[in-house]
Length: 132
Image 1 (spheres, helix red, strand yellow):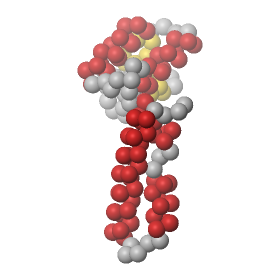
Image 2 (cartoon, rainbow, N blue to C red):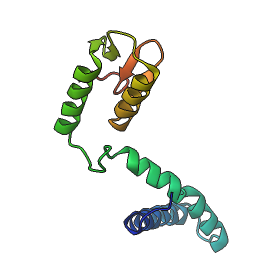
Image 3 (cartoon, one colour):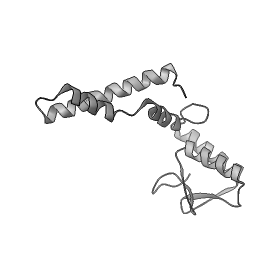
Image 4 (cartoon, rainbow, N blue to C red):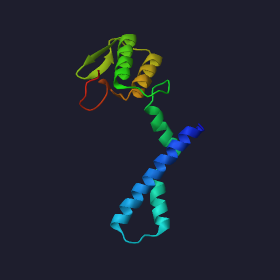
């Protein structure tokens, strides 16, 4: 995947911010430092652009639009209805077995919304949060 120009610009702003933070912290702890060491630390502290863009994409829904909490809740409700899900102990799981294709689709949609699947338990938003 080749990143688009907007993603590259956003990444450049992110990388500059990381570099400035690293320079600030190193400046606090050491009076003099080799500039090549500073460059290497900054470069290693900055995520490669592909990883950064992938993380950004995970924060967006399947249409590429950032979702508010209310929109996210509506999407979860749609998934509950479409896949006949129930909530039990903070975990969402289907009432009946799903086909492999449906399960993958459900898992991908929940993943896009920030949920994770735990084997034998179901989908959960966060460690102690409720699913809906």
